[in-house]
Length: 289
Image 1 (spheres, rainbow, N blue to C red):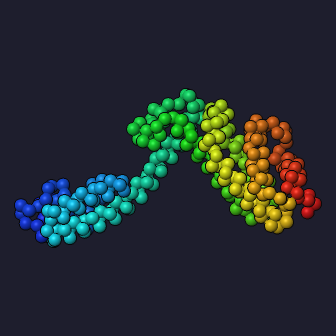
Image 2 (cartoon, one colour):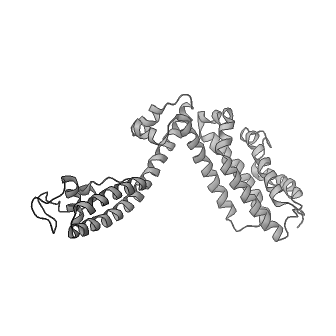
């Protein structure tokens, strides 16, 4: 790709009339339709910074430029706006990927060494990124820990969404949601090794992070109950209240379920008929229907 010659003159300019070098170079680059991102080396400003830059440069151009030169500047502004918009999208995707890398690395280190045994330097080194980059996304280790919890809860939320999307009867779906919740929570804690203690030791921090997940799950229960009432499977007077109770009952079972204290020695298949009886009785469903 051709690199513009620094001696080139855009149309309408006479020797000795060029503006200062930086603006001259930018106008020459903008006048070359085929310039590349690497050649242009244009800094992507935030939206506010770009507006301020445009204002001052625009005012300077009006004062110093002739009408023909002003047209060239407008052409550059248009090209630069498109360029900045496209690359801002690319940059945001890159940021998301980098942040997720830090979260994934931190989770593995927390699982191996625990929260106290892991430092910000460990995370930066293991991720292959610099400390400065790490601190751009997370100001302290607790912030990464919260992000790890959010990431794990997102996995659980996706699984629950998959169950909610299944084409099965509401009476079967509610049982499936309960077992999916408990099994995913247990899997999450077990697979995170030394981090599992932090889930229970820092319970208030976990509760703060998981609020959105709790709200989303309650909304899923409501949706299933609404469908069940519509098709005559459940007899529920207050769907919102029953959805809240269901969520917090299941949530209260998490710790004993993780430690295997519920239905000791029994498989999920063996416990399901009993769980159905309890749940359906609470929902006003006839067991023989």
